[in-house]
Length: 62
Image (cartoon, helix red, strand yellow):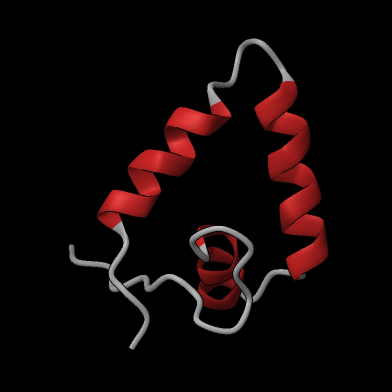
């Protein structure tokens, strides 16, 4: 199964990863960013590493 998820061109703060995920899954952008921020700050969820891996795996904006 191949999923074509692109980083966002319009909704980006750093690389557009959260914006791209929210566009693909039709999520509210602000809620997605808040959830990621809360998860990234917890010690059990390595948010920075997940963000960097997604940045490398997701395609550049079209």
